[in-house]
Image (tube, rainbow, N blue to C red; front, side, top):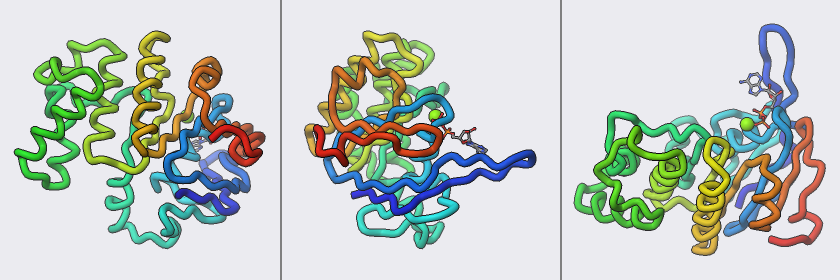
Length: 229
Ligand SMILES: Nc1ncnc2c1ncn2[C@@H]1O[C@H](COP(=O)(O)OP(=O)(O)O)[C@@H](O)[C@H]1O
Ligand SMILES: [Mg+2]
């Protein structure tokens, strides 16, 4: 469960202050599928970065699985992140590594044994339909395929939460539907999924809870209105 308690975030820059989030209060339950919508600059990425503890609130606190992120010591942050699979708009694959190694990397970092790595990596690549591309390099893949690799990488350590910041922002509409379908299947298997997007058509097609941010504030939340979950 993720709880935002009166969370505000202000970025201090040399020239000005930027109020990225203003007094956000909400709860995301386990196994929810949540879309976060809003115009550019609305605070969507900040919202996700606070959950990953890439940023720290200026005010308020975020509770993830009962633990206060404000009180979480820096050395415990890697354990928090292990619960989370992250998908970025620009894929962030390592170009000189094969598809297999890009996905395996996340398991090697935490010291998993190589036999387990091989089995699991091939399993998640199969899940995203890319087992046959295990030996390819990112430069040999389409945008949609790259995003499926990054989804496999996000899944490989069996996270409780998948966090995707505009995962379909750099791929064509057909592939976007494929990525969303995969995220939806992952959710049905019990993983919480948070997806930032500005593609309203996808939201309509896939349903789920919709949180709309505008200028740092939550202006609508279908979950809190008793809408679809
Ligand atoms: N590192 C940063 N330093 C200063 N301002 C930032 C930083 N990151 C985001 N902002 C500002 O905070 C606001 C919200 O940004 P962001 O969360 O990235 O919005 P979105 O993802 O919805 O486009 C914007 O006004 C943006 O310019
Ligand atoms: Mg953003």
